[in-house]
Image (cartoon, rainbow, N blue to C red):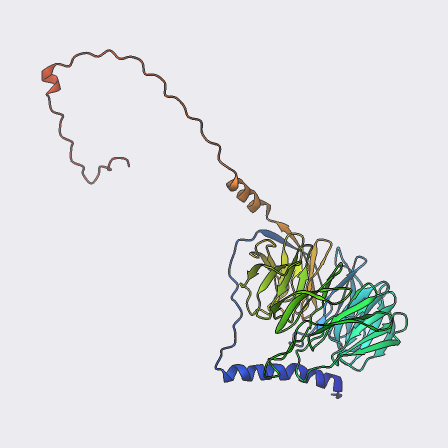
Length: 445
């Protein structure tokens, strides 16, 4: 087997924290937290599987950043074995497949005429979206564990060595590089760059979020979202491994053992922040922010203030993906390949389905009223969620007020002529009641 320095260092970055965490847990005689058992509940959504596909993957816990991307009615996916593929969004029909012959670990990033992936050996490969032909291939000398961001001008790539690079869209030529220090210990994973306007925004392992110029890499702002603190290197882990979310003039970010925060897109000023710990990430809609914590809670917060709305802990320690918002629910996936839908207003479980039985590490994707997931074996599933109309009808009927029954005046009784009862008849006693026997039913039965 050929020695790869980038793979060796990446392996150490993953193994060392896990080993030390295990030692720390054993030293405190603390049992490993067991995943919450899945319990039955009354579904309020009907889930339909629309289509399935595959690109081949690896079920080992490698923590690869091989997520899905959707652009112009197509779904792009990549497998650890080196295959990149395009599918029709509506039907799942395969359009093209390309074998890159390298161990892919980051992707897919799609935009315009390019879909871009990265490898464990530092390759960045751009393919034509039309037919899957390889347009260019370059080396960046650092494992790529997140999808590149693609714009008409540049491809922005984040690697595990703390470098953010801007590459030419047309040729892959390096345009600029930005460095950030990497702590001695860090979680395995890197934040996916996001392009907003003329800036590329991304989180780093030192708890900082940077915005740099897309064309030249010039620093626009830098903000510390998750300050490092604690006596040990384990306690000082503050990686921002998930992609920031950008909505208008606002940027949302979350770090491990740090904070979830809202920042200004132009200045990086922190408008609010709250203690939180997440390495999976967050999702947003028009009003709320949804967060999967490191312990497996799903939390809903107000976007403008950070005030908590609800917290769901039925999925503790199940290795949840980042949540995504659909029109009528929130969806997260777990380490056993289950997809869970939660009610947006209350956080109550609304539906559950299986996407193949293998871990789902990367965030689901929402497109055209469908939810798309890819598990670590490379299996792709597309689902559609619709309200349970029968249950909704019954609940609506039960909630309808019952109309009061109008009072009815009793009819007047006709006059009855009374006649005197003879005294001897009035004094005659009534006969005694016959005793009940075993074959006689009691009164009323």
